[in-house]
Amino acid sequence: MPKTPIDITPEGSAVPVFLEEPTAAEITQRQTEATAQATAKAAQETVRASALAKLAALGLTEEELATLSV
Image (cartoon, rainbow, N blue to C red; front, side):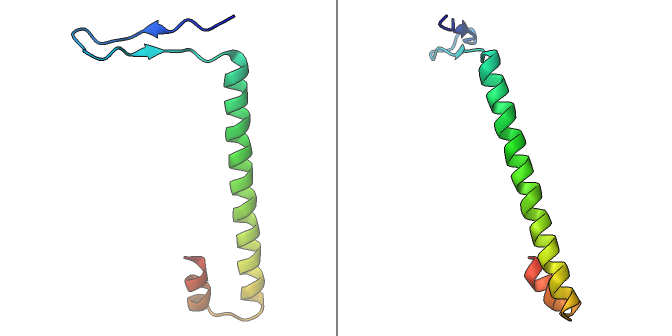
């Protein structure tokens, strides 16, 4: 079933504005993509923190670690 755009053009506007409501499948897909991005970011931060911890264990000073953390 095709989506029916909703006219939300402000009164007196020369440019028409339409809103298309996303389907349940589109909403689910967007939520899945957002969750995947958040998970990937968290994993990347975990890997970075682990690498910095290993470097600290090897004897890097706090100043050296701070330059790597930026």
